[in-house]
Image (cartoon, rainbow, N blue to C red; front, side, top):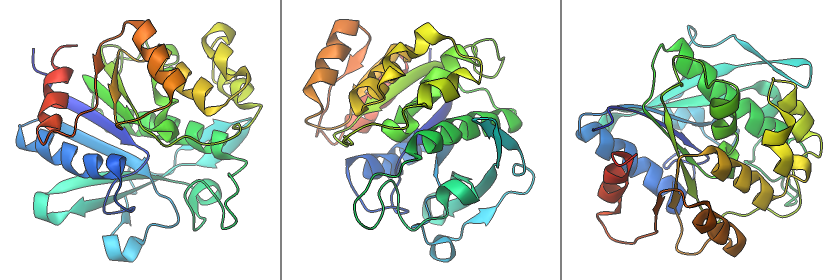
Length: 266
């Protein structure tokens, strides 16, 4: 059966960030799906490096203003939107003054990994899902791209599994060659638990390395896509051992069509 409502959650999208495998795919995949007659909602973080004037971002007042609690602290959720006019495609941006008003994505000017990246990805995931609910829109497929979107599968499967907007969603997770070194916030697991998710579901986040964050996303997803020609070997082996539906990487121009067909097998 064809899936008609598809939620795309991505770490990067071109032209808002420089072109790479992920950002280019996420520029073309929504357009392809839209041309196939599917309902699409596309989200990414509103990093401070994004030029709002050039890309015509504007706040969506009716969706903004909600507070998301992270570590017992309220953080205001701001939703902005921009349109790729030539293809009539909208992109929603998750914004917050504390987390995203800095002129970098995930590293500072000296190349240091932001200490609050763990909170930022948690806020991003929760922000996307709460906004989707506010839109009163129930996706049949949720496709997450990159480690910055890795907590969305956790929240859907363990926090929103009874929510009518996500109860029937199938989660697809794409893995790219965009590893980070070191660890996220060591208290990340505790901060997620405070949202109501059990200890056993977050076991691998005891040490929140790239591998463990991605394994957690794999565990909570229904299917996996290899987004780069080469990905972390440990993760690739983990995916194959999981026996979950898997779409291999392909440089074939028809790869987007393959992704579309893959959705419909779930």
